[in-house]
Length: 367
Image (cartoon, rainbow, N blue to C red; front, side, top):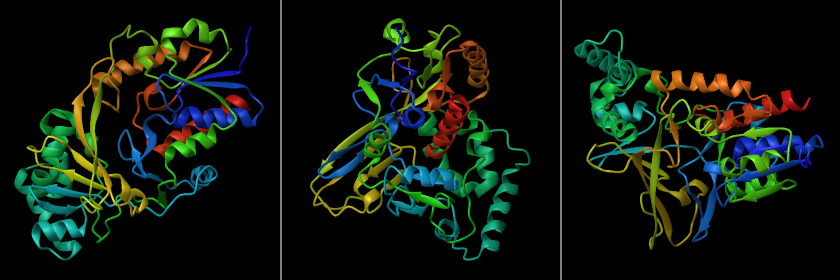
C-alpha cells in the first residue's frame, strides 16, 4: 500500500528543499538518510559553543535574489565575507589573487604593473594555448604565484601533479586587479546564525525524517511505500556500479579543541607548500565572529577515494564525464526516479545552485 507521494533519499540541501516544496503543495513525503544527521555535507554541530562545519567550510553566496530570500525564510544570515589567506612557508598572501597579493609578491602597486608582470612571466614560459592546469594557471597569474600559491596546494588537493590535470579546473580562478579580499564576487553572502543544521531542520519541520536508513540496502521495501523517488545519492551506486565506479576526491578532517581564544586570526588559511600534509586549516568560530574562550580548528587532508568512502569532489575529467553520460542514459530510463544534487548528477554544486536546481525540479514535478 502506497503511503507517501515522494520518498526522498538524502536529507541534504537538495532533498530538504524538494521536501519543503512538496509539503507546501500538500504532498506527503518521507525523507531518509543513511547518516545519523540531516543537512548532508553542510551539517554543523555545536562544540564549545561554536558551530563546527563537520564536512568542511561552507559559505553561502549567491547573486540570485530569489534564492537569497528563500534561505532567509529559514534562517537569519550574518555578514560573513569569505576572505581566506594562503600560508606559503610562513609567508601570508591574500586570496583571491588581487592587488594585495601582487604587491606582496612583486612590490607592484598599480593594476597596470601587475598585468605587465603577469604577461612577462607568461611570455617567458612560452604559453600560448594552455594544455594543462599548470599552463592555465601561469597564463592567468604568472609563474611566481603559480609556484608558491597554486602548485603545491592543487597537487595535494587532487593527488596528482598540475601537469596531469586538465586546464578547465582552474579556468574560473578568481583574479582581481583591485585591493579586494572578498573571495566571492556575489551580491549576497553570509553564514546562517545558529548553523546550517538548524536551517535545514526548519525546511524539514513538517516532514517525516528517518535517519540511519540505507536506501540501497532496503530498496524494495522502501520503494513499496511510494510511487516516486527523489534520489540524491551516488548515481553509479544506484545502478550497482554496473558500468564502473565514478571517481571522486575525498577529504579527511582532523578536528580539535584548543585552549586559546584565537589560533590563526582567520576562518580559512590555505597551506600552499607541498610539504605541509594538509591543504588548509579552518577555525570555525570566525565564521560567526565568536568570542568564546576556546577555539575549534579542523585540518583538512585531501585523500584518494575508494568505493565506500565519503565522496566529496567529482573528478570531472574526460574519462569520468564519459562514464557519467552513460549512467545518465540509464537514469533517464528510470521513470519514477528523479536524480538530483551533487552525487545524483555527478556535478560540483555551490549551495545556491543546489537550491536553484531543487526549486526548478519541484516546480516542474509538482505543477
